[in-house]
Image 1 (tube, rainbow, N blue to C red):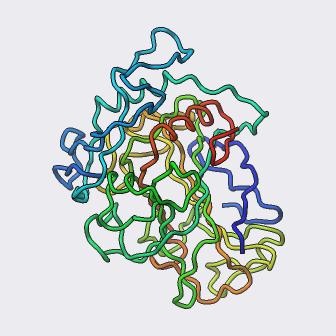
Image 2: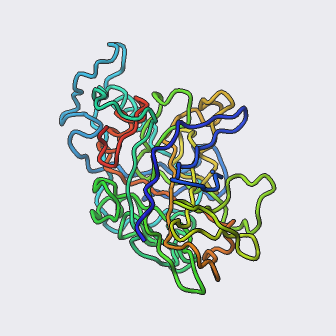
Image 3: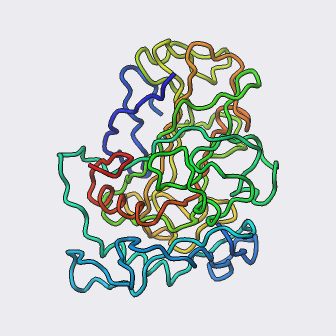
Length: 386
């Protein structure tokens, strides 16, 4: 079964205390519901100064973030007071024998990050044409690459230490993956080819046999009041959403459910009520969404979540998480509909669904998409075009 193509998503919705993504629109009834080379000094939560600074910036690529070789910045059409970068933002060195990172706080290089942000906002956005949908987002269209029992974020350097994962994007992802190794590997199952990132989820099983997704669309959007403040992820940034230890439904639901997308939608539930049964013309779908805001200091944290957080009740990134980042969302389709017997995740029940993201985009390609699409509040395709 081919991947369900989500219809254009509605503008992100906002409640008083919680922001959430509007579930992609389906044709008919659907149940709506929501690295590294430097070692961190300690696995215990400590201030930013206690963590290692990520060393992923030793081999520069030309013209990244729109900065030309030699460090000069093209005219950006921004106020003259806008600081100019003094050096070209850089890509990671090619992989040699870089060890995997230790869990803990991993600090971003503050000087490089500040220069990259200045360079980013100095870029002149492309003129919006073709009357695109007014939703701030672009996407990467992905297929399953491979499966293994590794997790380079939770258990770096420990081969076979995890439950089974299905990986999308970078074809080299394993327990020893680093920003350098991911960036060096140009093979990906995602479009565009400039996205060398690694994406993974627990493997879905039916009667003990792995079921690959029919397709995964990774959306990069914004649910913030002002998407114009969103900045790209730094190289080697990683995070996790969801909880593999969660084996029961949460009282407030929290959108922690699979549903049926397509004509006919859901026709019933499995005997235990955990999984939907879909019409023949529909298929099993799941969406997982990451936070919109970042502390601006760390590429990772001990629990892989504490360096990111939600927007405040006014739809802004503030407090501990003052930096707006793209809201990453996986929309996962599976080739399952009427026969839902023996379904489970490698991590347990369907409620244990979670997702991991390890950024290895080519910096210039990512920056252009964030600047042209997200910052201007318009929808772009995986090619970054309106």
